[in-house]
Image (cartoon, rainbow, N blue to C red):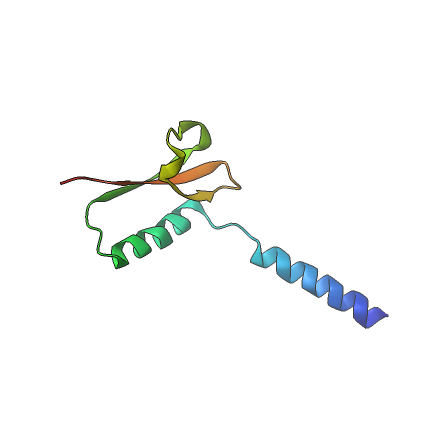
Length: 77
């Protein structure tokens, strides 16, 4: 029985680490790397508060426990 309790506690602790949110800058960097891998050269990524999002179609990420969004805008040449 003790082994079972220890196993459950270990799994619970491990899942909390996996579920830890990324920082906004870290997530923005990952998104930026994916965009650059697709050879997009002229774009803007911006971290904004939820209230500042005017077009939900521009949102490409969420961070800070859902309090901020990362928005993407492709710049025309």
